[in-house]
Image (cartoon, rainbow, N blue to C red; front, side, top):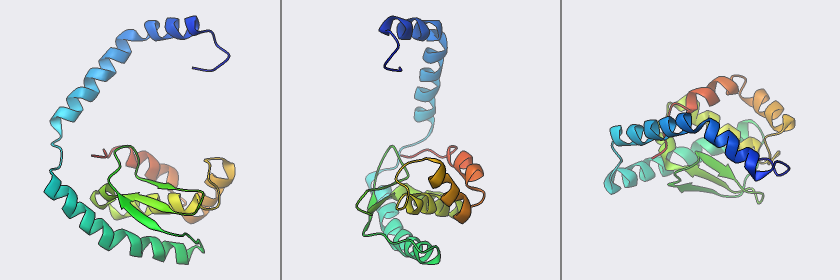
Length: 148
């Protein structure tokens, strides 16, 4: 809720949308029940595959578009596909190996662009557009995939 709004207005808004919020929560709970969670063996298999595939591809894209990064790490995040630190380190989610190659490349390019622009401002989007012209379409398609 915006800082300048009284708490009461936030509560009124929430209660006006209460039925919708409860319906969405139930939908999310049901979607998590339908999709089986990977076991530890499957996660370790994905981790091995990710370590084999992702760092070389990141290096290839970085060289092609003249990006320089420090380190790349493969993690099992549950909330994001990747991240880039201000120190130039890139973290990639091992679940990227489950994605089609073009979406995987989109995530890698997205993180590489953060090396020059750490926010999601106009300069970031302009750079991303220059290296991945259909990035908006790919971003939308990526939302269809769930991170485990």
